[in-house]
Length: 137
Picture 1 (cartoon, rainbow, N blue to C red):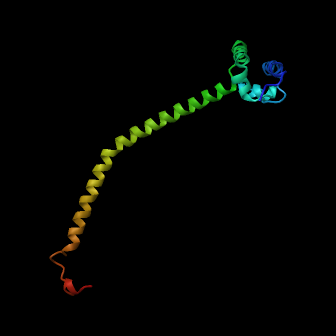
Picture 2 (cartoon, rainbow, N blue to C red):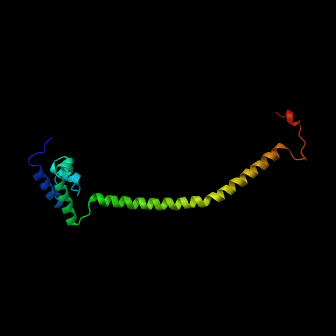
Picture 3 (cartoon, one colour):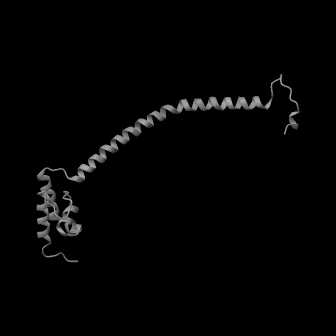
């Protein structure tokens, strides 16, 4: 598919609209995708056929000294992930600290269980069964 003869002109006009905050066909984000939508061209027109216009757009965005929406969203995501990692590390530290106490509790409960089972196997000396043990069931 060959590019339309006015493709470069449409891209430049779209650049002007987006950079001036007057986008008509896109959300006005400072991205190549929004620029392609605004110009009415496929995205690969900017990445493959007209990389000079793509670079010019990025240069103009940097000169405008405006942080692109994508970068703002990514920075927020990074901040959330850093907080999540911090919380996970604190939780992991607490869980690791709890392990020895839980092991001790498990050992104590296992010993108590074993003692109770042994106690149930042989009745105390002061208890006389009404029926012999082998006939109880």
